[in-house]
Image 1 (spheres, rainbow, N blue to C red):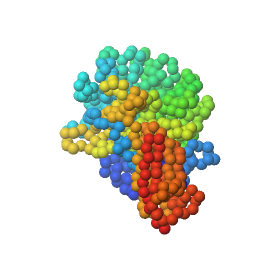
Image 2 (cartoon, one colour):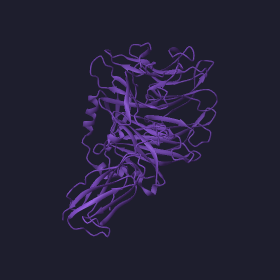
Image 3 (cartoon, one colour):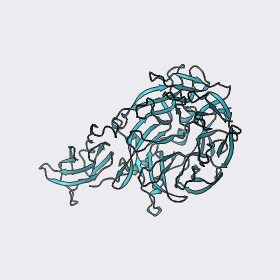
Image 4 (cartoon, rainbow, N blue to C red):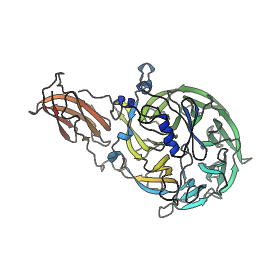
Length: 583
């Protein structure tokens, strides 16, 4: 038996070499039709702006080939084997039914790199959604609060005072001054010049609707704002990046001025667009780290002492457009956190893809690549968003990834033959809805996380808002609570193709993710029931596998024409299909 190498979904890499149906001009026209402004800034580099003039992304359009995809497959580089996932090949009857639409609300995020803000700021057990409202018989864009009521609906609760020609967008929430009251950060300003406003409540039981201050020291379109105590000195830091000036800002709250002081500011080392970032203590040395990218470079910025920060590590990746930064909490059980970065690659003549790289510390201020995932045919000119979340409540974090305008996919870690891989757990394709970002939250306090997807929907009437957030509820049994009651699925096999065949035939084996055993035995028998060939006898990942037979027996000799039976079995069941060999 000759089985194609398992990249994941076991589809040969040659698929990636097929000619992509769209030229550069076709891609540009496609996104211009959606209202985006596409400007060429240098060879192969295009700037993407939204309808309000804000830069969403810088993308690179070049040709790609197998060598590109195999760059990290070179054994001399000692990099891990890449894992390939084909989202559009996933069986939605298995992977698309685990969540059902629960609510749709007229609110969304303003930029894909900023997820919708969800909190229970007034501590009444009824969560709020903070975002923007656009449409409803007007072209004005408003910052709003929707709050869940006792009937589990989400009525509009508050509209922040609109200002002409101003964009306002909630981007972060947290307790800035340690008084126990949640404070909301709202990006505001003219379409090309922004600042960050903060609002607070009257008490711990009120919503953040009172103006607090406009943050000092921030310039340009600021995104990815995070409130935390990075240097562990008891005062909160505000960490942001500026799209306009390609800078990272680290500020610290000063109670004497009721505003932020500047701690550190750095322009992109490559003088290229700064992508999103994530924070943590990745080498576990007690010092706060900021992990960010620019161009094809990754950098680790560390709080070395007091208010001092410096770049302590960097590496180069094969692709630019770095985004999808996130942190996982030791998925491979070796006591170390991992950090992830993704790159959206849009080649001109081949299938596009999103690659996710995972790094882990191997010493003080030293990191190594430990995992790679390629999502093939994931095409988007807009930066998406990703986060870790224990979505199925089994104690293990999954990767929740929004490929903007395309789909949301959840990948689940699994140990197979001593290695960890990430299996598809759920996929949600966008239909008449441009996905921007994704988040998770337990809205109804039932111990199960809901999935929220925010973006722009295609309106069916002028009275309908452009903006929308869809909330999906779990439609499966919790792994922890219901292991004994979970109904085990069966594997499925397709008919062989071609059939009849002359030299080779293949069939698809679909393995669900909750089989009692993933060990498969696949054999060929003749009409007399005699075993002719052992095709496979091993464990298989869940997902789709293409199994090939070359018409030969166990000794490598070609067989005579006739009917043969392909038997597939595991501990649960046996399935058999017929195939005809013609010489």
